[in-house]
Length: 166
Length: 166
Length: 166
Image (cartoon, rainbow over all chains, first blue to last red; front, side):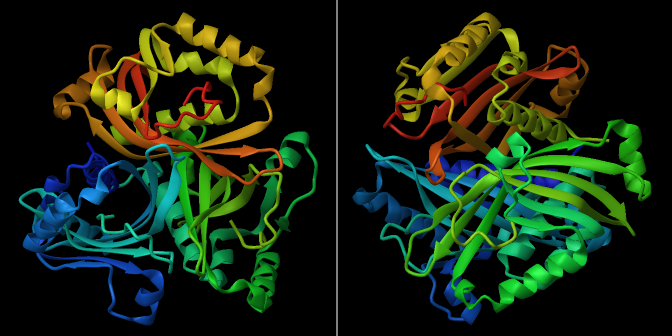
């Protein structure tokens, strides 16, 4: 037996485990096709400015992004670690929650806070990026998938290396 | 279907979303009236010293605090982000848990760890305040509310700007 | 009513509350006897190197470690605070989950991310240690216990004071 919250907590756990484990090739599998994936500074988001650090609208674009990252030799020697907390789940009442459980038409909105820590070789662990996930999740063939995932991060200052998925 | 833990996780998610979103006017609604809200350094708490950084004993006092914050022009340009983790739920057994679900008489104790990150304009995100919530929660008109919320923070050093609710 | 995830979240909450509260004497009670407790840098773990910062294979060894810590007067004046997030629960399907609920033979694997913050007197709170728990949990006399707990931390750089359980 598990609740909708249990399932969603499980989804986020798998998602961040995939990223922290460096299994980027599996990352696009967490999304529907088409989808919307966006990393955007809070300031731009709140002012409605379109400028995003990363913007993908399909699985193919997500896969392209992975290839670019794999090719960027500058990237390797560091570890990322995500914490996710405070999931606000809006499945528009029990009715839609049931729909979400039984068919592809139901949609679940989840807002959550995240913090990502970065550890580079011979350096102490640092706070890398902190912000909020604004997600839309649907059930596809029995699996919960992100139809939309916005990563709205708090800093205006953009770390030079922020090309990695959050 | 949801469990008591699901409900409590949802309560904390809404609470920190309210604070991180800057919707201070909604903040007092998370409390009963009267209530006890206190921000206190761990050292004082453990020695039984009464000195607190913030102390409110009613909704009116919480609202006053919000007005003071709104008037403090020094405050605006920064983002706060809460993570909450490790909820210890003590509803004194299944019987009281049921009471808590069905009537106002039941009381639920929750202990949790929190970390708050602060991002100021043109600065990297920093750890702002870390500590423990020691809460008493009751059900009022079907909604879980804080009857008591102690924020016991770990640092002795007090950040100059710690006038914001935690 | 509670789900397996609820129970596990409760276990981790009690575990970190024990450590953060400094109740080290209770710490060995979270483990089976024999057990495996290990703190190991990620780099060593991934290369299969045996070198660990701490290694205990029984309750007695855990208790010894507590006595050593109690004797280390260098240790006292600081606070630790754990956040645990993203629990991946693998109970090998509902069948084994049920076994885990009803008897000692079932085993539950949990992977989770953790972040530990340290606050020393007159210093701001800092990120102390970040990493991953790789745990095996069994039910013993109705209580969930760690049969194996690996704390794989991200930094190669080892803080001088990392002799405290994670």
